[in-house]
Every structure is written in C-alpha cells, then in structure tokens.
Length: 495
Image (tube, rainbow, N blue to C red):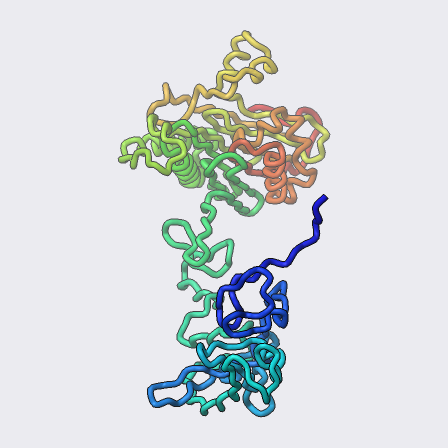
C-alpha cells in the first residue's frame, strides 16, 4: 500500500533569483541560495491592524535626481480607531525601517535577510564572499512631505475613514414642518399635512374618509355610523335634530339612509336624502304640521333630492373604481325616520331600513315598527313562505322599494304610536339588524341604560354588528322616548 502522508511539493523556481530548479536541488545553481533555509509558507496571511507597530520596508526606487523615494507611514494617515480615539503612532513618530538585502545581478529582495540579518546566501558569514552577493543598509527615509489637507474625522464617527457630515445637508430624521393652519393632520404620523388626494405628504399614509366613522350626539338623541369591515367606503348617511312645536313642546328627529350599492353614487344619494328630509321636518313641524303628515312630506322631499342627482353629469367609471358596474343605474337609497313630539312617536320609511321599540324596564315586549320593502317581506305577506324560509333565501334582501329616479313608484310608509311607557327607538340600517333581526335580539343587544346613555348605546350596537362580521355599512340612531306616567298594557298603542 502506498503511503498516504503528505509530500512537500517541489519548488519550481528559486525564491531569490527565480532560476528554474530541478527536483531534489538543495542549492540554487545560479545564485547558490540555500533552499533548505526557506521556511514553509504560512497557512494564512493575517492582516496587520492599521496604526499598530510593524516592519515597513524602505522604498527601493529613486527619483530622477537620485533621491530615494519617501516612505509613507501608517502614522501619516489621519483616522480613529473603533473606539473613536486617534490612531496611535510609534514613540519616535516613525515605524522602524526593515533591513533589506539585494543580490548584485538582479537587485531582488532576499527575504531570508529579514528573518536572519547576519546570514548570507549560501550560508556565508558577513566577512566571507559568495556568488557576488553583498549587503546594503536600508536607505534612510527622506522627510515625508506634508500630506494634503484632509477633513478631520469627528471622534464620534462610527468607524474609520467616514467623513464628517456636511452641515448643509438636510437631516433625514428632522421632524417635518407643521401643516398649514386649517389643514388636516395625518392620523398615522400625526405631523404631516394631508393633501387633496387624501394622502399624507410626510409619510404617504392614505387617510380614512371623513364618513368612514361618524358620531353625533344632540341632546337626548345620538347616532353612530361606520364603514364596516368589508365595504371600501361608507354609503350610509344620517341627520339628527330638534325643534319646537307651535305650543313650545320639543320635537326630536332622527333620519337614517342607506345607499344602494348597485347604483351610481350611493353615498351621495343617502346624504342628499337625509339632508332633504331633515330640513323639511325642521321647517314644517314648527308651523304646526302634524308629525305624521310632515314625515310623509319629508320622504317625498328626500326622493326629489335623490332624483335630482340623476340629472347631474356622472364622472363615469375609472380605473381606480372597485365597482365600475355601479355606473349603470341612477343614484338610489333607502330611508327610515322617527319623530318624537307631544307624546307621539311617528315613523316613516321606504326600503329595508328599520325602526325598533325597546322599553326601558323590559317589562313589556320589544317590537319592530317597520315592514321591509323587500322580496322576503312580499313572500311572507303573500303567504308563500314563512319568515324563516323567506329570509334564508338568497333573494331575501332584494329591495322592492327605494328612493331614486328609476324606482317603480314612490310609496312612503308612515305610522304613529303612543307608547304607554318609556323606552328607546332604534333607527338603523340593515348593517345592524342583519345581526339582530328579531325585536328580542335587538333588546338583548342594546344596553339597559340606553335612554340615559344614547351615544354609548349606539356605539355598543355598532360594535355588535362589527363583532358579527361587519359585512355592510352600519348606522344606528338611538332616540329616547319618555312617558311621564307609564301605565300597564301594551308597550305601544298604534294611533
């Protein structure tokens, strides 16, 4: 079996004169270099840290005048170490020059002289002679010229050779300038100005639309509207107000509208309807118009406001519109409203937005005060399905009545009630009642102190819808109705 030990590789050339060598040569045939004196090459070549002591070879060249070239020392280079302190230098200001050895014919550097200065090629002593070799002292280094000016490195610089910061440069972490007075501040960075495109000029964050979440409290009536978790915008709208009847008694109004998502500009339709209905009630009630008649007229006014939108030019679908199919129909919405005045509760509606009655003391049963204009309601009214079957059908929420230019006909529904005990009226869109459809479910979802804390109660009901999935926009108005001397019997008596 052949040996597996590592054999040293044959040297191809002399390390002193680069003369080709034969395998087994112990001395160079040209210069007599002792090949056995050459140490094995190191396994690695460690780098000497900048600024530490070490042997710097003297320059071997000369200029045209015969003056030796100056030696560039590490101490001539400005800089700091990793701790931020100036780099150290040799005590005498220069690093020692190394002794060098040349062979006469070629002037090549003899590395063995560095390891053993007293030895000569071929093992001769300093006093002997061998192969024309001679020994020269290292030339004294000429004074180094003054280095070119270099920008000082601050001691706080996190590393070597990093130039000082330009004081004219803008600090990237400097706080942004405050936004101009009267402009919106970004909800993300709380510092940037919101541009007209709805994005922050500082951090680029898209801002929520103003209608994504709205809350309003006016005396004893309160409303909360939220975009929900699935829709890209809030297409609901509302209006709450209060006025006085001719005899001075108060009248409180709550209007809630739900834009039809399959129609053009449903958010504009719901807003126009809510504003028009509210304004007509505030105008007619103080003049002595009966609340139920005023509600009927308010729904007609709301319908006319939505119809007017169809005559306005539409911008048409755009590349950024997530629902371009909506631009095929006229603007449309549903509406439900409530008026509490002089011991009378008046409800009006078109579509599937609803109103519920919930007694304060829960001593009487709650009740739903509206009937939907929907496919499911028609099936139940015709006796073709029971309520559970109808609302389980995928066509259940297809509405059969709405406000808009393409509605089949306008048929406002109104009803008046005289509750015999105090309670609250819940006026809402289907974004809520989808998660609390029955009157008993609505009574369980609303807090017991709803009459005293209407805004909190509306927030709780919106949260109930969001916790259930928030598939639609959610709008809830809470209208307390107080009865001074409650009596026994039904929670409300229809007038």
